[in-house]
Image 1 (spheres, rainbow, N blue to C red):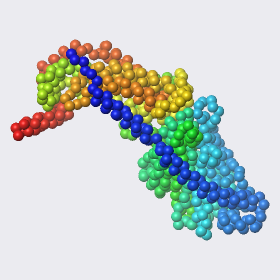
Image 2 (cartoon, rainbow, N blue to C red; image 1 turned 30 degrees about the vertical axis):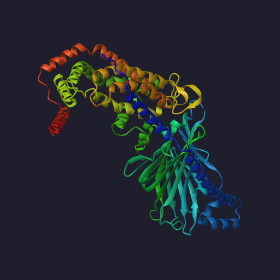
Image 3 (spheres, rainbow, N blue to C red; image 1 turned 120 degrees about the horizontal axis):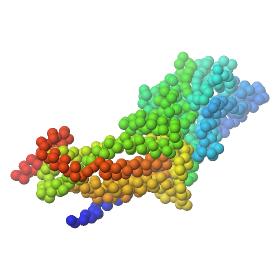
Image 4 (cartoon, one colour; image 1 turned 60 degrees about the horizontal axis):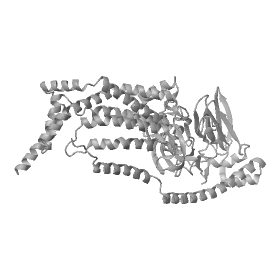
Length: 634
């Protein structure tokens, strides 16, 4: 028999596909000219902001001077600038001081100037790696700002971030309540109220005004602006940045996100929360009374991970605070904590939807199968071992489907000689060949689609794993074997240079997964080639499979080198188990002689009634055959 050779066209085709993938990834990298233009624009904005800041600083310094000296001339001068809110400059609180409130899990530092949180520290989590001693700080060193722009009746525009609030700390049972009041008089103020409960990441945050209806222009809502420049907290800044984005809920419960581009903007309607989500942590603003409209913006700050190594994204949200009877009154909440599905879902506010679990059936599999099962295993055993047992259980559950797939391949393999005979007999009439092949399948009781259906059923579980493991907070800083953090790459060799698309390190679990994929495809490709003869006018699947045997492991090596070790471990174990199941099924459950005898017996019986798909396919082929006959007559 003549040995088939590689078809050059197939090789060129796969080379082109692989080249296109590389080209797409390369061209998605930011253009240096665009970066330079954006940088120049930002510098202009910064210069303008700096000039404004110097003016505001002068006012703030004068405010402090008034508070300490009580100079009536200076008070009169400030009244020209601040109007009624000059009253706040006469209080002892008009100085750079802070109030700290904390519980078992979070520590907050609130400034008199601006009345907002200037430090938010998570007390139980460390940056980069376990044992670093550096706690995760979502807010610090002026990376976050909260400001309300006030329009007064005497045509002044003031910003609360530059004005001084008067703090008052009380307790209600075990709850700590911090009231920050920006006063325009003894009983006229704008209040931020922070409520911190024991052992809770959710902080109550109320905004209300009292007696300001004669001070402020209430014809349009107040503009609240919240901004945050997210700090890097994980080992791989590029991997962390991939999962750092703005999420929000609006339009009566619809959850969406702003995207990962260089600059993303979204306009919201009836928003109930805005989340500045990092990979494993989140800062979320929630409101009981929806914001009628809101705008969010996300700017990517990582253009070159060698240089941009501190921050990942610049987030900003502008939300309107509507007046009611001349006053504002909003009951809101802050969440500063981990992006842990279990913790977020416990609040029953839909904020667990900020975790990327996939849409449709993929999200369903993650929520109702993967998360409960993995959570149960992780509560009893080490997470590395939990991944292995989790993978075994999933693969065992899929084994009946795997068995049907292999059985279908075995049946097709037995029929191959007869299909080859039909191919030779009707080699000049492809349509007749297809019809006779379908008749043979029907007589033998073989469904040619049976081998595809199990693969389609398993596909959502495979795709679910690609969403689940990168989002599994439980894996963060959990070690297994040589991997010190299953949520990040398991580097075993640090390279002195950077390889495009690969990185500057070598991860071992992706190598093991690539080897397992190679042997799995090597073992199955022969059966698939024997089972599925090439059809006239169709690509040679045998040759394509031979190329994929080498392309798939190569893609695994490149694309998974900087992914979390947990996902690579799952893929490695999954392919090992599949190989084992395949060997067992072939050795103990599939007997080619018995299958051949059964097929011959089926041929003697009355053919099974065709399914809808087969019947429709048969009708189409008959119509094409009739059309072809008419064309020949002409």
